[in-house]
Image (cartoon, rainbow, N blue to C red):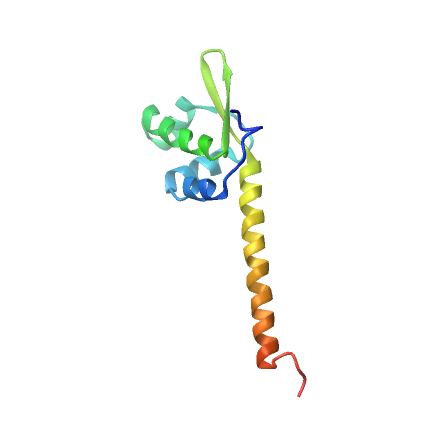
Length: 113
């Protein structure tokens, strides 16, 4: 199933981003340019096999997609998964903000002296 029709699971996204190398790959691909495994491997000083392993994790989480160009795969960042993760974090932040406001109200901190 391709990234376009696959449901993104936030836990997979956070898990994929939990590795420094994968974070750097996402950062590198965030400029919107497609890159081959060879380009990425040379830029990271890693073997093609190591980069491929990290890209597969990112692809499984919906963070990157690849297109075949001739004999080469070109990887691109798919920002939808990052947007889903951001919405998740925003929802958690709203819940904490609401909880803090309820606590302040309970303690009477919003009342003027």
